[in-house]
Image (tube, rainbow over all chains, first blue to last red; front, top):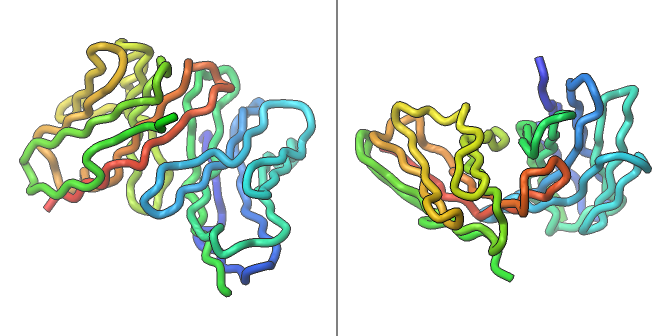
Length: 114
Length: 115
């Protein structure tokens, strides 16, 4: 079945540590790929997106993500986490050939320790 | 520029009562989306509008849910009657059009609690 999987429900890191959030998808062709962040009481905010080209994508707030076709993955990374990064992170895809219909993963909740 | 506006932010009702949510998209955005976000899950699309036309309502439970976007700008999502399982966050989003590369901008959502 077509799906977006975020294997980690909760992740806790120390402030200043590096971060990697995992995302795998199971769509036949290369979908369009997105990462959104949702802070408490806030709407989802787009961090970055990948459509084609360079497989390493830079986003806002110091985040980047790497598309790996062989692994059907689109993992989100940040070299040094700040306390304000504590939030929920959602990976999403628009299946190839579809209109702008976002399919979301279940999310990963990030906690940051001082 | 104002973002997507939703109201109310919170709503508590008893089961079997009706409830309505309102959304005003970003000015000039033709496409409007309503999503349902259950606790611990990602948002799921309920309905998508292109201007005033509902072009994808396949995931909308039509026995109790309805939506409208009469003038192609703001939109209302209604539930009548509400059930306990409807407790969730209802998100509205908009984009300038519905191309696959167009960014969707989300509102803060309405958190519904059905008692």
